[in-house]
Image (cartoon, rainbow over all chains, first blue to last red; front, side, top):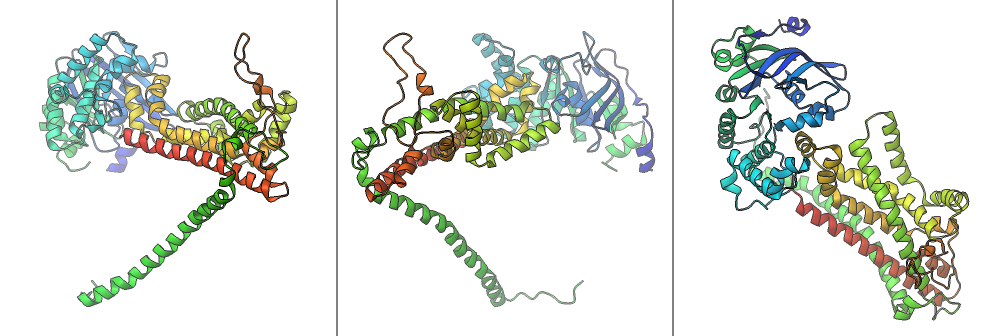
Amino acid sequence: MVTAVLERPTHPTTVTVDIKQPKASLKNLEFFYGATRALKGITLDIEETAVTALIGPSGCGKTTLLRCFNRMHDLTPNIRYAGEINLYPDGINIISDEIDPIEIRMRIGMVFQKPNPFPKNIYDNVAYGLRVRGERNRGWINDKVEQALRDAALWEEVKDRLREPGTALSGGQQQRLCIARALATDPEMLLFDEPTSALDPIATASIEELIGQMNQNVTVVIVTHNMQQAARVSKHTAFMYLGEVIEYGVTDQIFTNPQTKRTADYITGRFG
Amino acid sequence: MADRVLEVRHSDLHRNVSRRKVWNRVFAVAGLLATLVGLVTLAAMLGSLAIDGFPRLSVDFFFNFPSRFANQAGILSAWVGSVLVIIVTALIGIPLGIAAGIYLEEYAPTNWMTNIIEINVANLAAVPSIVYGLLALGLFVYGLGLGHSVLTAGLTLALLILPIIIVATREAIRAIPNSVRESAYALGATRWQVTQHHILPYSTGGIMTGVIIGLARALGETAPLITIGALTYIAFLPSPPIQADPPFISFSWLFDSFTVLPIQMFNWVSRPGTAFQSNAAAAGLVLLVLTLALNAGAIYLRYRMRKKIKW
C-alpha cells in the first residue's frame, strides 16, 4: 500500500474549511532541492491572524514548506521554487524572482527549533531587527524592546539585566527572547519551526500560551511534531505527507473527524 | 542463548582489570616521553641560545649598527628593518587575507571554480618560502621595479602569510553555528550586515590568532628575503617616516634597502670567530623572544574570546 502511495501523482488536498480572509494563499506550490521534488504542488489558504499548524511525519516537508514563507531556502544553493505564495493585503508572490527575500523577511518573522539568541546582550538581541533596518532613535528602540519583551512574557524576568548576555538565560527564556526578537519588528506573520522541541514541559507550556495570545495581532504558522500542541494552539491544521498536504481543515475537525484514512492513521499514532 | 554463563568472582575481576590496565600505563609513559622530546629540545635550544647570547645583550647591542668588530656590532638596522617589513606585511596581508576568507566562506557560490580556489589556497600554504622569494624577485623587483626594498619584502611576506590568514579566517568563521546566521537573515539582515554584525565579531579571536601566527612566521623568514636581495650588512637606517618639511610624512622608507633580524643572524653565523657566534646567539634570542611573545599573545586572545562568546 505504501509503495502505491509513493508512486502516485499529485493528489488534490482534502479541504474541509473555507477561509474567508486569507493572509497568504498557496497555489500549486512546488519546491526542489536539486532534482528532488520536496513539495509536490500545495494549494491552501492561511487565515489572517489565526494560528495554522503543519503536522506530519518526519521528512514530510512541513519545515520545507514553512521556510518557503520567508524564503529561507534562498540561503542554500541549488534550490528552486515553483507555483505561488500570494501574500495579502498587497497580493505579491513571495517566491517570485522579482521579490527580494530581504523584503519578505522584514514582513515575516521566524522562530527556530533550537533557541538561537545572538551571543550579545538581551537588549541588543531584541533590538537587532530594528538596527538592521537602520533605526537610530534610541528612545523609540527602547520602547519597542520593552514592548516586545512584554509581549513575549519575558520583561518581568529580564528588565533588570538587559545588558546580560542572552545566551545566559534558560532554554525557555532564550526561546521567548527569540520570540521577542521576532516581534520587535511588528511582523505581519510569524513562523514557528517546532519551537518547543528543545524545551522542557513547563517552558513548552509558556511558549504555547504565548502563541495562543498572539492570535489577535499576527498570523502564525507553526510546524510541530507534537499533535497535542497542534490541537491546543491552532485554529487550522494541515496534515502533510511526502511533500503533499493530505488534509486541511479546522483543527478540532482534523483531530476528531479526519476525512482521509492516512490522516486518521497518523493522528491515532498508527504511523509517523 | 549461550550455554556458558559468565561467572562473576570478585578476585577474577580484579585480576582482569589490572591485566588490561597495564596497557594504560604503558601508553601513558610512552605519551609522556613523546611530549617531552619536543619540550626538552625547545628548552635546550633556548638554554644554549641564552647562555651564548645573553651576555652580549646590552643597550648598545640594540642601538649599534653591525660592525667589523664583534664587540661593537649591534642589531639596530636589523630590528628596525624587521619592524618596518612586518608593518608593511601586516597592512597588506591582514586585510587581504581576512577579506578573502570571508568571501570564500560567506559569499562565494559553491561551484567548481570556488573548489579550485579553495584547494589552491591550501596548496599555497605548503609552497616553500623560497619559491615565494623567486616569484617576488621576478614580479616585484624586476616586473614592477620596486627594487630590493622594504616594500618588496613586505609584499613578499604578505603573500607568504596570506594563505595562513585565509585558512585561519575560514576556520574561525566555520566555528560559528549556522543558526546564528539564520536568525540574523530571518530578521531581514543583508549579507554584509550578517558579516559585519555577527561573522566578524564572533570570529575575531580565531582570526587574530591566525594573524599573529602568520606574522610570527613572517618575522622569522630568511630565504625569500635573501632571494629578493635584502642586504646582509647595512649600517644605516631607512629614511624616517616623519620629516621637518611639509607634508611632514614621508613614505620614501618603503623604497629603502633593508635587512632583518634573521638575515643579520645568518650573516654573523657564517663569520669565523666565536665573538660573532655569540652575537648571532644574542640576535637569535631577541628573535625567539619576539616570536614567543607573539604566540603567547595569540593564545591569550583565543582564550579570552572563547570565554567571552558562548553559543
